[in-house]
Length: 247
Length: 249
Picture 1 (tube, one colour):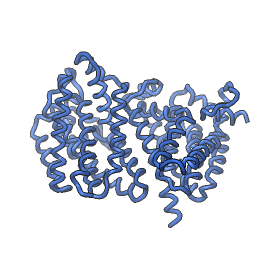
Picture 2 (cartoon, rainbow over the protein chains, first blue to last red):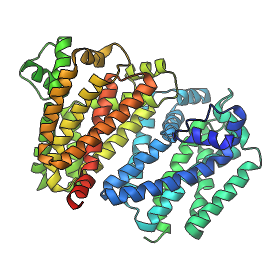
Picture 3 (cartoon, rainbow over the protein chains, first blue to last red):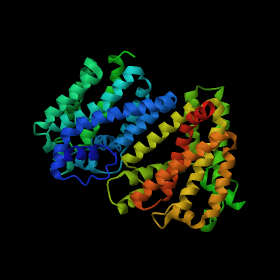
Picture 4 (cartoon, rainbow over the protein chains, first blue to last red):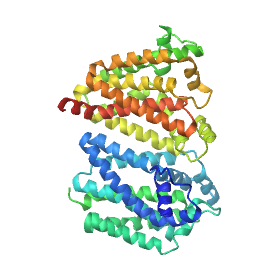
């Protein structure tokens, strides 16, 4: 239970007033709960979309769902995307790139990536209707968090110093992670049928692809890279669902 | 009358034929005129909206209005949104948050907050039906600038210095009463829906002020700006469902 609370505290801004600061063990184990938190976010977003859809006109509902989506995660993964892009374009050494990712100021490349991501997500949401919309909102957050888990499990960790992300990396070693990914796959099948499984398969594909690109410029993945992987996965799911689900 | 010009000079980039040198207490007192200046800005938006209606598609019209507001205000309040997002959303101590907010550099939370705010505003403008546009834009301007007066006067100040503090020093209950009367006048065209819109403004400004007080012990000039933008967006977003609910029920 403590590890589930830790996952919720880390991945969302949902207020948990009675939960203290999670310890190292809870954080390590929390990674196995990431897919479950992704599934929960999907359900919440579908509910928000239903309410927004009855109250507001389409563009306003789209923007509202997107804003709630970002607010729920506290822009955690978008922050990772900004830092990753700033880091990957920096040079010339690995150390310089890792330092650029640490920099709290957003660079031009990182800011551009964030603005484009939000713009694409907004327009993509506008093109999603009916069952395709529900499928996309259910699966995008789920696939995003599963991709994070895959990336941490598969790739070496990129920083030498102990960080929170290192704890998450250590947590992927156990049997909990494959089980949680299998449960997530089951949820995708249950909620969205065979199409759900096909879309779910995007998560590892994107995690492996983006992770490999990052590894050309860095010694391993970092928390920021995993955040970027989450954002990219979510975006691809939003864009691909219309091809897979008949409106 | 000088205080109206001071408010106009501070809140807008509308060129005035003269430049007023500002005394701190006059700045605070000028807050009584904030809702009037806001309603004027809303009126400008409505006029341009009307002029563009026959010329361009609704999407283009709405996005141009978002740009117009940013230009008319010199992006003053959007700057507040950005600094507030960086300061309030970071994982750090209260002191560090205040430092981040005075830092002129832009962090990722600022980029995300600004983009989300602009997208929401565009979508809200686009979703506003024709009969609500003129009264809605005026109410938006009046209520958002009123919300700055409300949060300045009734909520604590986090920094004890700076522009926000200067305004707080000079503004009291009298300014809030004046501002409330002016905001109420700006709501008259909306009739009963205006009352509900005022409720939205009070709720959203209070929620933000409470959040900032929890995080940094009070508000700053940047947070007042964020309050202004949030109220603008939420009032326009809420108007269509409010109007529908009150006309049918």
